[in-house]
Length: 279
Image 1: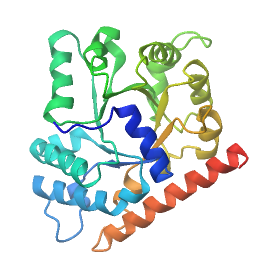
Image 2: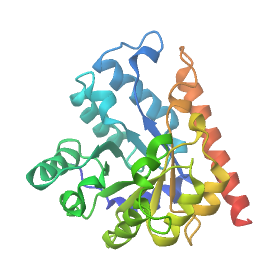
Image 3: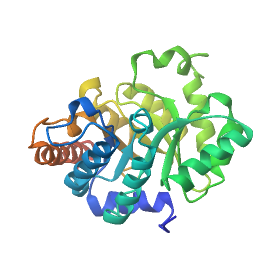
Image 4: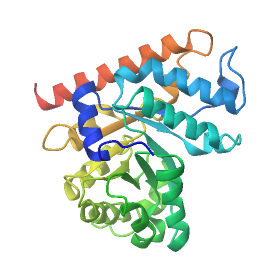
């Protein structure tokens, strides 16, 4: 494993150095690769590598999605991609989107998978099995633990919104995350599609960074999410965008198109952030 600063410091450094709250999700779909990129594990690595190189100046994080690699048997290529990102773009932390969640020795092995086999800086986790399922991840104090809370998908309220209106499940998760965040390495997944709920989460977890999916094709509200979710320092948010960047063009211009799309999203977020803060 390479030695890097603790994940919270990496993120603070990236926010400052990049002037960006944008994370680009690396979700390879071989059927959408341009001509010249093979639709196999090697092509997944090549496509994501070229995208990452194109957008690195505009992002504060990369987020490779585990299933998009594993479905093709491309776990080795995923490990190689993360190693490449650490080597070529060491200022950009890598969040492994795997949504792990289990108990006992299985959770410990999942933590080993994320932080040793893949050497990710952070991993997304599912809190459904309770705090004991997250303890093995939280034991890695220098790595990020990104907890599902109020996700961006339409059916998320089915369970995340259960309970009373004053104490829905997602707020219970947020309050617990605020307690788990002793080392500043806990994040919460909170969709831009639900800015009102995002604001409630920020109120109970004022110092927890939020990973915010749902912009672009899902129709999330950027301005409302910034207004509700910025922390006291005017940051504390990481907006994930994937398809709108990865597949901005599906021909030989895909790298330039991805670069332009990422720069556009970064600028849009920054302009809106400044407006919300009255700067």
